[in-house]
Length: 349
Image (tube, one colour):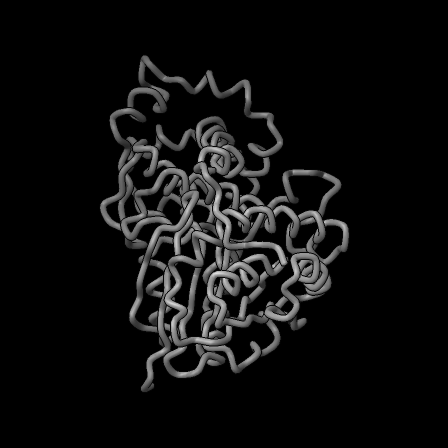
């Protein structure tokens, strides 16, 4: 059996950030070269809805873009609400507003033909994710994941993250007194295996749709955890979640989906959990004020480009959890800019 309780001796955060931050510069380039966003915003402090109407762009990607610029201190928001007004800060007024003598817009023009810049312009206007990694011969992420070749490659990529992120997550989960974990859209099963390794009293089930369910079975067997972790095939959007589990885990899942799809996922979890059941959301979360952390805002730009989702603020997630019926929230940082948010299904409801 592979020892999944091992932890690295060094901090991997800088290595993660290179990959997670790949797209942020392209989003800034699109804002400057296509929309001249900062020049208009300097003259017209506005809320999200007004910005979307003026530029003919859509809410989800615009929210991600503005959060990125807030985290960079280019702009500021009056609060974390949907009606917050955005204002240009001094650094952007000097370097990103076209009427400034220090305007750096021409510095970005030379990169405006990059494929990801063009994709961001389309995404902002349509709210439709681009093809995976902007490959013209590839499908969107959700479609590509239905093919064996892409699903195998992508699942392996997410699996290798789990060897670092999983142990950090395991140390933050209040698993005492609980016995069965349901890892929803659990990919390779790396988190389910790691959590059972750290908490020997737990067994786990990975709930995944084909073809990833088959990949998970092979990888769980390779790690030597078939006696602790099983796999059930199913689609979390169309089929009821398996019952008889007192912990539910969404690890790096909810950030792939917009609010309209996150809501029913949380409702399905609430319905399947027993009273007192624990929901664990492991992800990269923005702070409650949506002003950072910067690495999470940067990562959100990548997610916005290739999925239907984004990184959620803890305040946004708690609002969604409350609406689903959950209570008693906790939050803790784990590793590499990730964090864990937990919630309970009340004993009386």
